[in-house]
Length: 196
Image (cartoon, rainbow, N blue to C red; front, side, top):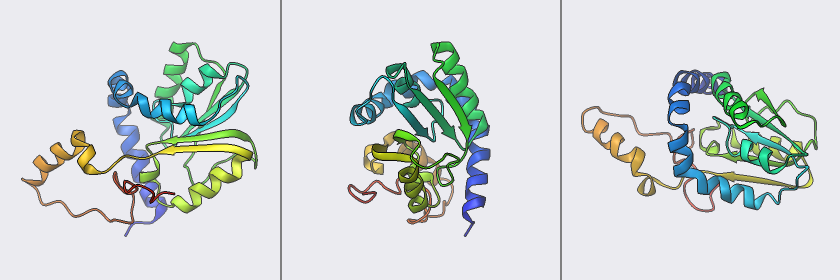
């Protein structure tokens, strides 16, 4: 079984490799999953001076939308992949959003002082984090007392035909090993209440 560092290194390499595709299809993806970002934002109780951390930002959402809604605040976007952060930086520039900064890091080792942020978000990343307990502890450490932390993970395979149909086609031709139920994977936290 690979170590957490080996998993993160492989993830960084994969996200860097596919960042161009994510950038190309960003608008389609955002239109498809926009309601999840909307739900996260609604639960953060944003103020116009919010100091916010968006973990595993990918191409920049929901962090960039939060920055637009908090013009007197500041949003820090993080990602394990420098190439994905570069996509987010280009999106911020196109959107004219300047109250943001970008930090390459993983969810389990946030390089920020204690009680820095009014709120923390993490959309569609917990299922890939090798040590979720450590990541949650980091989120709580960097959040101010009374701050809000809001995350989202994917529902189970039965609700995600966009990935299960192609994988079924592949597995009809190639024997794929079963995923480790306790390791990083797309549906790791899909069971309602499990992440709680």
